[in-house]
Length: 177
Image (tube, rainbow, N blue to C red; front, side, top):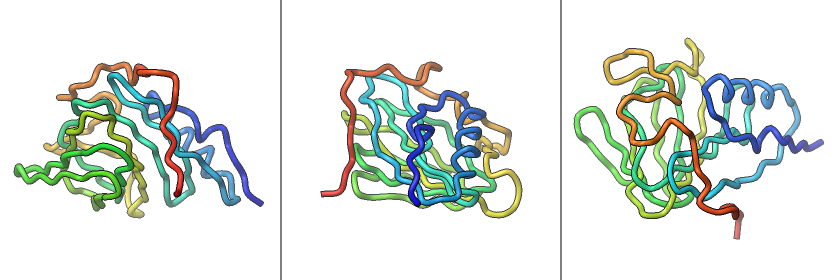
């Protein structure tokens, strides 16, 4: 009955690659087991699709200390971030901000403009759970002015274009106690 797919261990390096893995995983119509495992980073970030169905997807995201992204909105996708390790400062378009730390999360309904940055010295590791609103392309992402913005080629990013450089060969594992 249960499946385990090696696709759920693929580190994503482009929007198209992420969509392809999500599509392949969503075609598996059985309960699936996945692991929360990611490399420790010196710089950059990693994105791994760990599970997907037609109406929900879960990514494991790891960011090096120092920061990440530009103000943006997902116009046709509701999503939630759950912090597993580290601290992220989420910001809104009018300077609002809130720090979210391990065992906390934030839900962002479609169309809300936000960004976040790593504020902890350790890597920020989060689950990102997304679901389509039922209208439009759930992958559509816009900048603060409503212009298209690709998730892997952001303006104002402090990260290098290469996605990640492993700090060492061991992995973070997040398992229930």
